[in-house]
Length: 97
Image (cartoon, rainbow, N blue to C red; front, top):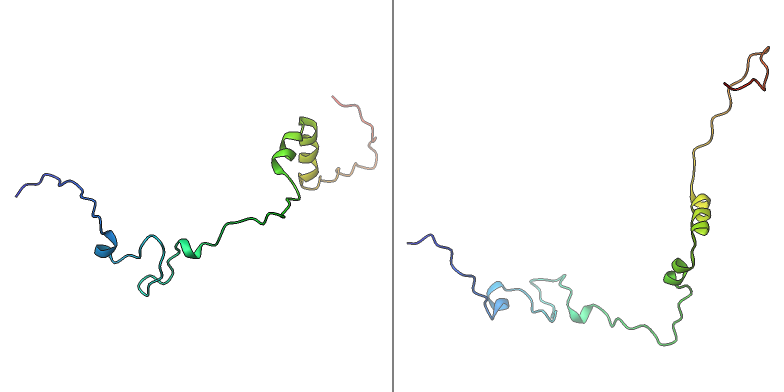
């Protein structure tokens, strides 16, 4: 007997061999949660439906300044620590080195 690999043969009647449901999605007791063409819905948008926003247009209208402003608006920073208390004899406006 030879160890050479055998070529893969595509079976024309795969559903009969594997007992899988057909690609059209007919329900069977063997695969009750099978989603087929019939159970995926119509995928149709009503003709009178109107979009409230257009994300592509909104992105195109943004400039570097508006992006920076939006970033600053949405950015949440931790609270700044309070300045340490100065000793009683120290001046508040000491010269910086």
